[in-house]
Length: 325
Image (cartoon, rainbow, N blue to C red; front, side, top):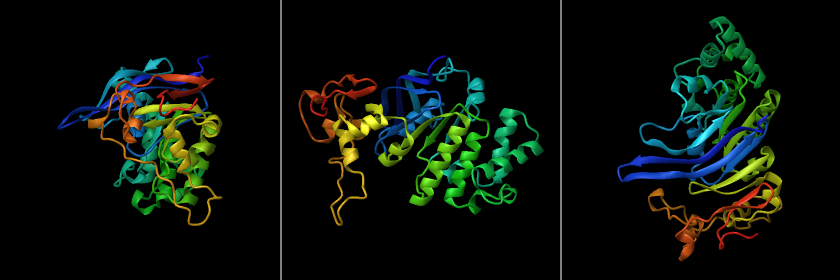
């Protein structure tokens, strides 16, 4: 049996602007094993969501373009699959939990109808059967009074409840892979923990793998088996989660970990921030982009460092100025 449910190779994604076509994701490679949770972590704007949305060709059109690469899922290349076949996979074998539940849900359709639509489309259920299953799913994601909630509209639910509805839609067809694109954005800490615990529980019950997109290293530590650190459209370090936290090698990974807030932080201690700012894709250098952020000059900006495996399953972009081995 192929250990990898999903394999991404040399994925490059660009956006068209009035100034030209600029890559925002470059030569990305990663694998997801059956039943595992892989995280992609980095600051906002580093290309995490663009990577996730390109897997199912959900980039905004006509500005978003996949320039090259392959995405292999159960022996099929999703980037070259006919649209009809791809639609049979979207929401069925691979489901997505979007970042903004209020935008992902149709404001003029009842909650139950939106969940039922997935079941009718992919499972061939009747309207009555699909609505009954929608009630069961709302109950499974711990929404109270599900018989009443199926008849309500998204605006009448809280942010946490809307996110639970998206999880119910995502697991409705028992997918093999769940893509969770920052599923706890704009939620308070208590609700964040509830949503993440629910996502772990549902994934475990289904035996589904998960691709978790986040900017929170704490979320990665609690939920992922393997993690990739992304900066300026590139994966700069990847390792099993415990290995990454105990032996980070790239300077950007060090900076992210240092910026975490810990319970033992002394009162009124100034919080650490990553120095510099992320360059615009228009101004990305071909070489090490973290060196660019730190204002360095020289050969490291001219040629991209190679990705090397420093210990088993621990990979890093080997810039001599940004890497400790």
